[in-house]
Structure formats: C-alpha cells, structure tokens
Image (tube, rainbow, N blue to C red; front, top):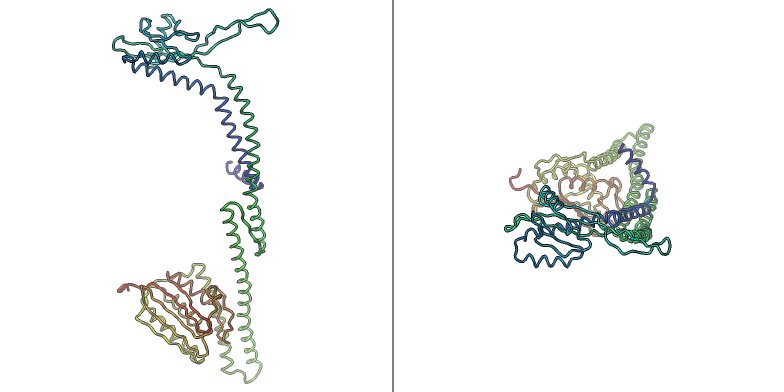
Amino acid sequence: MRNKLRAAWEARAGRLGIQWHIMAWLTLFVAVLMLLLWLFQVVLLDWFYQAIKTHDIREIARAIAQDIDDDDLSRRLEGLRRQPDLYLRILDREGNSVYQSRPGPQSMIHDLDREEIASFFQQAEKNGGMALRQFRQQLPAPFQRHPDGPGRWSKPENTATLLVCAYLAESQEQGTLLILLSTALTPLDATTDTLKAQFLCIALILLLLSAAIALALSRQVGGPLVALSRGARELAAGNYDTAFSGGGYREVRQLSDTLAYAAGELSKVESLRRELIANVSHDLRTPLTMIAGYGEMMRDIPGENTPENVQIIIDETQRLTGLVNDMLDLGKLQAGAWTPDFQPLSLSALTDEVLSRYRRLVEREGYVIHFRHQGEGMVEGDPTMLSQVVYNLIANAVHHTGPDKAVSVELEETGGWVTLSVRDSGPGIPPEELPYIWDRYYRGKKPHRRGLAGTGLGLSIVRGAVEQHRGRCGAESQPGEGSRFWVSLPALPTGGG
C-alpha cells in the first residue's frame, strides 16, 4: 500500500515542473511556520505563562527553605516585598506566623484559618514537601454606571486566579515550617486578542512575501534548468550543435558545462561511427572484391591459375583475417573479457620472437628491422597479449616508415620500468593529430603504402593491453622526422622470477 501511494505521489509530482515544486514547498514551509507561531503565541500562550509563573514561585520557595536558618534571611525576604503581586507567609505547625509580607487585595494566604493551614501542611507532606493550588478570588471593584439606562449602577465582575505554593522547610530552632507563596495569574484574554490580530497581519504579509520569493526563486533556478532540459531533448534527438547556457547557480553552470561537453563528445562519437562504417565497409569490400575477381579469373581464363594470383588471394584473405581479429581483440579488451594471465617473462625474448615471425612477411618487400636491447627486460605479463602489443607497434612502424624502409626497435630498463620503443623514418605525425592516434579506427590523413594499410585498431589494442598491465604508452613525432611509439611496463625486481 505504501509503495502504491509513493508511486502515485511520484507520478503526480512528475507532471509538475521544478518551478511549481519550489513554490509549493516554500508555501508549505511558510504555512508550517505560521501554524507553529499560532500554536506557541496564541493557543499555548496561557499554558506557557502559567508554567513560567509556577516555576518562578517554586524556585523562590525552594530558595527560602534552603536559607531558613540564615541570619540574613530577613533582609532577603524584605527584598521580595518589592515584587508586585507576590505575597509570603511562613507559619509553624500551630498556625502561628513566623514571617509574613504586607497583605494586599490578592493575598488570600493572609486570611487562611488553622484548618486550611493544616490542610496545606498535609498536602505538602503527602507530595514530598511541596504543594501547588489555584484559587478563583473575587476582587473588590468600584460601582460603575449600568449601560442599560441612566440612574442604574452595577458592580462589575472582577475575579483573579491565584497560584499558591506551599513548601515545607526544616528549621533547627522552630522545627517544620510551612512557606506559603501567593501570586496572581493575570488574565491574558486581551493579550491573546492582540496577538491574534497581529498574527493575521503577519500571516498575510508572510504569505504574500513567500509567494513573491517563490516566484522569483523558481524563475532563477527553474528557468535555466528548463532551458537545459529543452537542450537535452534536442541533444537526444541528434542535434549535437545545441548550445547550453547555464546561468545562475554554480551547480546549474556545472550541469550546463557537462551537457556541452557531452554534446561535443557525442558529436565526436557520431563522426567516429560514420568513419567506422565507411572504413569497415571499405576494408571489407576491397579484399572481398579482389578475392572474388581473381577467383573468377582463375576459374574462367585458362593459364591464370598462377602462384602470383593465388598469393594475391592469400594476402587479401590475411587482410580480412587481421581486420576481424583486431575487432575481436579490441571488443574483448573493452568488455573486460580478455584478462591477462600474468607470469614472469622476458620482454626482450618476446620481442625477438615476434620479429622472427614478422621478418618472413616483410623481407620480400625490402624492409630492415633493427633490434637493440639492454638486458632481458623482465616483466610480469600475459605473453599472448604482450605479443599482440609488440606486433601492432612494429606493424604500425612498417606501414608508415620512409623510403629507406628502416624500422628501429629498442628495449631499455631504467627507473624500475622496462621501455620498448619502435621508431620509423616516415613523414611523421602533425601535432594536431597526435591526441587522436590512440583512438580506434583513426588512421590519420597521410596515405598508406599500397598493401600495407592498417585497420586503425592496432594502437587502440596497444593502449588497452598496456593499461591492463598497469603500464604507460605514448608517442613522439616531428613532421618530416619520423615517429617514435613507446610502451613502459613495471620491471620485475631482481630475483622476482
């Protein structure tokens, strides 16, 4: 039942905008505040007044009881006489007055007989030494002219509520004494009426003021959010040129900046998606067309079934295989399905093994790969994954090296890191392209050598695999001076194998 009510409330609240929510909550806050003021200043005013008067008269009686044998008590009691509407009597068990203040019109304790005094004694003893009573007393008042007609006089009702406190005190000289304190509880009807009138005026002013503040606040806070919501809907519809303006508060500006950043990133993703479709369709269509064309030619034309034509079909098949494998490897890295099987290994030996396999593929094209290394470069990693890293770095250098077809591979260990770097002698990478070379399917604007164009996924696989090994990667390039790609992995401590 509670879940249903909550769902209904959320559904109803969802149909209202933030501006109306702000106004509703601020109005509710003011209403609760008015209710509290009404309760404390009007409804409970008399209760608070009586509670304060009761506390005061009780504390006075307790102080007198504690100092009942003090030599300076008489001077203190005389000081109480200056308090208006406060009367005091101290009596022994026989009803004899030990001390009493000057009687007044509301000092009924001065008119008590012995039975009433004995009753106060008994009640105080029964209640642990203190008793409180309230009395209604008729006070004398002058005759006034009756409002019904001339010549008629009436005595108006003039009553007061008296609060009497009886407190027992133990005196070493006089035994048990009864302290009687009396004070008048002033009627608060007139005060309450005045507060009611004031409350109505204050409530009206606060309601109008809260409505104005709620309207201004809802426009200041809700206005930018409404604009951001409108822009977000346009962004969701595919309009990546949407401008977000977040004025007002810091959080609204931060949300605006975040949405603007998201729009830029989504625009890049959309561009990459289109480029991906174009690249993949081209990379798949070209080899398939060549395979189909050479296959039909070898089938239909006598004498065309030559080793050269068969090699072309094999090369194009390998290109397709490389593209599919790269896409699968990158997908597994991004999905976290390809986790490294860490084991101690020599990065130098691993690189030499990859180079021995790669030389067979490029030696017929005249490429020269130099490998220089210092030490074994012991690291902890996955052999298959790191082999893919080395292979992709070398393949990238071969694709982009210069006319000398030279590629340099270096391995060094410094500062607890094993760094493998691959340098080519190609045209280099423009500075504006360096931040994007690790993005998937990014292949730059420079034309590739025929037959050696990459898939655009190799460097993305390198970065993903190196991050899995808690390593670092980077690139350095100057236009016309070639490029250097490097990866660094944490070195195994000496004897850590």
